[in-house]
Image 1 (cartoon, rainbow, N blue to C red):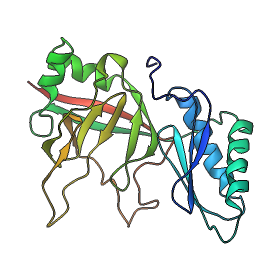
Image 2 (image 1 turned 90 degrees about the horizontal axis):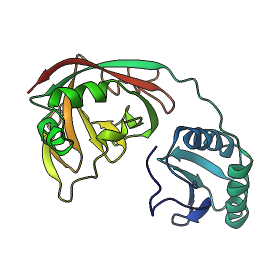
Image 3 (image 1 turned 60 degrees about the horizontal axis):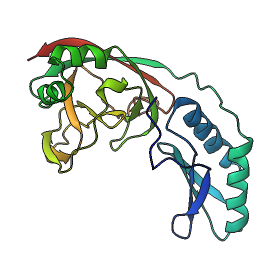
Image 4 (image 1 turned 90 degrees about the vertical axis):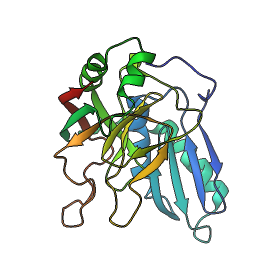
Amino acid sequence: MAAHNAFELAAPRVTPMGSAAFLLESEGPMCLPTQRRIWAVGQAAGDLKGVTDTQPGMNNLLVLYDPLATEPEALQAQLLALWIATPDTPAPGKLIELAVRYGGDGGEDLLDVAQRKSMTPRQVAEMHSSAEYTVFAPGVIPGFGYLFGLPEPLFLPRRDAPVNRPLLLNVFIAGLQCNVSGPPVPGGPQAGPTGWYSLGQLIDAPAPFDLTRDPPGLVEPGDRIRFILDEVLE
């Protein structure tokens, strides 16, 4: 588990986000038991009067509500009480295995990460693929999500300045998280700026989001991901 840092809260808090939403932030470090509580509170909060939607984040929960259908101050207190009363609730998510080609196109930062960590590119790939990751929250692309479970020796702060990387279903790491970038959209950009480090590219992976599939998203919060080492291009 990551060491305590200045961004961890000593106690949970609920703060307004505009005039029709609250952000519930958990205390302590990011961890699976806390995230399970966030998912459970999100489900329970959906039954509160005036709540229109809930969206889990990393160590937080966004709760949207109709200000004409509820008293905001009362709802704010309800959310905090709900957090305190809700236990860690296990979520039996499905396991998905995704093959990765480390390095090469889509893995431009593998050598950089290896050098920063005094490892070989293969050692980085083997360590990264040895872990099981849990989908903590929806990601920046439809159908995928932010992953928790990165081995601590691979923790790296985000870059100070973003770099451009191709959109090739890349596997990225930054901080204590892992993520997968979206595929290029026809007629859209083929690359994009990121502060994360690209380790490799998914091979023969299903589309993250497909309206002909039920459900259309490949993963949901609580699902587990294992990356299978296909090859390492050094």
